[in-house]
Image 1 (cartoon, helix red, strand yellow):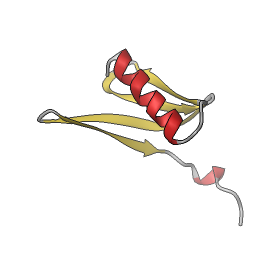
Image 2: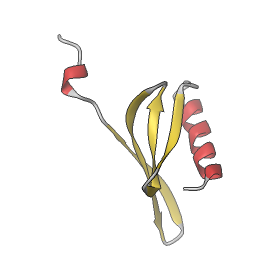
Image 3: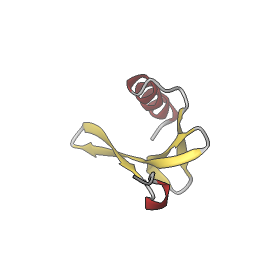
Image 4: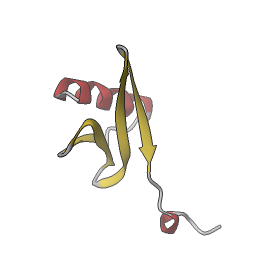
Length: 71
């Protein structure tokens, strides 16, 4: 993903979730995805899919069971 593409996607997500703490960070060994951070906390990975010129992004959010509240 290009720096411009990452910046556009980050701006979109910040606006959609109304949260400027969302940051997208390049992954050193994977050019087709970025890490999604909320402040300093890793929350998932966003993958780019380019299928015959149709570009989409999918987000895989990681939630650890130990982080869930007790009900």
